[in-house]
Image (cartoon, rainbow, N blue to C red):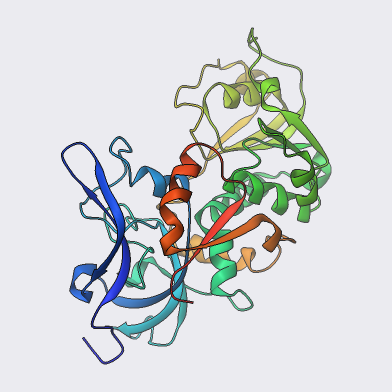
Length: 334
């Protein structure tokens, strides 16, 4: 270890016991961080649903124990074994095994493979990057995929499900910023919040789970970003206009997809799968360049709360209960 590295560091750790998970702040030595080509002094991380799952007994996310959760991070490289990512570079990292099978962002320092690291785009601060975070990146990748498919702002309304969550809030703001007519679906009383993000209309999630499903529903949406999956996603597919597409990126409503082939063969609709974990680094870098440019939410601060490492535990519980709105950044070493 060089003089740039600490002798000890503070981290939020989750460790499995017989029937529970012991979680909280601990003081660790740098050798506990595991393998990696670069050592990053972490400025910010964020809170995602997956982070909460990694800290509970039945979450089925954590692959190692003890684990430092945090599936994303932003900070400054203080040590590097190669010239690819030199010391002093401001970077971000997310996905792959970070915070799941490899120690993540809820620590003052993180050691990660250089292949996982994206240089922070010009004009984007570490805090802004984590205000977007994994959830916002997933939303950006969804918007990018819809546009790559051929969806344009003038094609008609674009539905966003789970609209008050991290992915949903980001998708609403990004689509609105691009000039789309956004319809936000939510089960919460948050119309003013969603309209503030740019939603032209807010509907109840109950509209997406009718008592009786038909093979095809009334054509409504030119496209959709779906962060919930299950029966609501099936209804969205059946409600797409001819040639429409839905970017599917979540499963909080379930993993089953109760629909038929009718929407695909009679309306020519497309289901676009969104994987934010293993996105190739070239595409990942391109999406972050867009996030720093045309996909940066106009009121990022307005949709973001900030906490410290010592406030993580109740926030992780709250996101599991569906009580967290928008994005939450974790101030680690800023």
